[in-house]
Length: 603
Image (cartoon, rainbow, N blue to C red; front, side):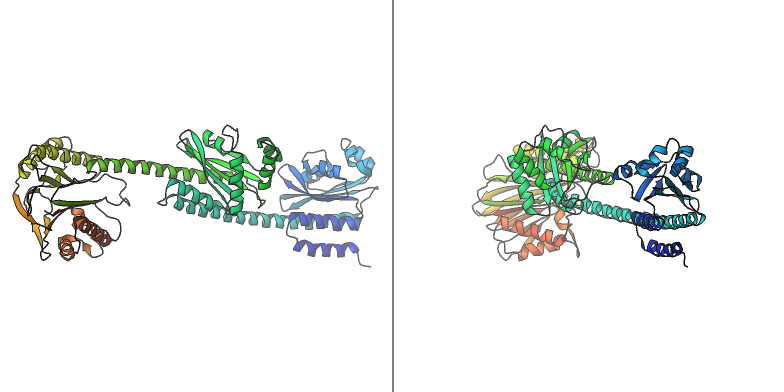
């Protein structure tokens, strides 16, 4: 007759080969062996360190299973002795319990059990765990039964070891994929936070990006002066976002609450709830309706991390798992802190950038006239476009234009200058030029004489700041019934161009002269030009002619052709057309400041 145990081993071998998890392997092993041997109780334990943890058990009462769900490995206990010695422990009757394990006898025989078999699971030199079988009657284990149980144990050990490796490989792959997803998300968030958007827009986009990839809900708070403001709430369902907004309107968050985004924003300390107990909702609810609304959101897990930069909290990032049933763990907390830290640095840089831009724009505005004066017999237009910020940072330009009245009625002075360099030092020299010339114009000096005095002032300033120079053109314009007469002198500045109303001719106004701020003795020549009614004089900085496009430099020839072909009927229209053409020619960031001044005789 065929031994039923041999067939059982074959069937168990095949079934274990198809089992994918340690729990499934444990269930198959104890069920098959217990059924064949008539065991009343059985269990499979996995060993991790100094603890045996139950993978599957059957036949024992719930209280016994719970008490023995985890067993410390300690000598003097049959299951531990089997694991530590690597040899099975056979307890065949209640008396053997009392003789061999007197301290464990009451536990081993509780529930009416008498015999017990404890078998260690080993694969090569690795302890995998142990199997235990309990019987309610004395059981003298025969050699065949012992061999069968040892064979079952060996099969189970091999299967568990294989499953452990598969689980470890799967977990490692999942962890690697999760880490890759996080790094990809951080890269996307980084690009978003560096986008040319306002701080508030960046934060709202960040909240939208987080849902539902890393959270079911995301909220962002920002510290403003002495209060904390919620800037964004995101969820895949807009109706839920609206419902939360209505709830917050009816039940505003307590600014003094010891938990929540406001508290984290102010303290700079993260708040982490892997599981959100109902007691927490009860404690934070104002009344029963508030509690019902809070419960309806279905919050399961929460991470709130501060937006920290240089030890200062800018706000808080809140991530919530709800209907997805997911839970945050310690790795998620670390990831959220990294995300919030990166966002905080980007926000802080954006704030500093905006502050610097505001300062630069304020300083630049202080160096240029807020508006050109109204001059009978003249129409004037000025345009200024600073160098683009890309790749160059924020700066104060060194281009200057100005028009002021002279002491003589109907007589006006104008200036166009281009200072070497950018930034505060260039701004200081620009201010020196503007205010010095305004003072000299007030003394009714001729253009060349005024530039000589300006050069001396620049040379004195150059003793403290060497290598600071400028090109400057200064003119004096007298209006009369037929037009205007212009006298000008130039210190190395590009020549002005005159567009004649008749025939659309363009004439350069060449006034030779030495640039200012380098030499103590300079040579300057004054020239006089007549502007008839409708004639326009165009002054500009080298940001116009040296603008770069795909065809090279803009150049004076293109500028002259534009003026000649233009149909602009006023100084304003011509200034707009010229600036637009320069920007279009560059086709990208301007590499230098551009300033244009157009004077049109209308008398």
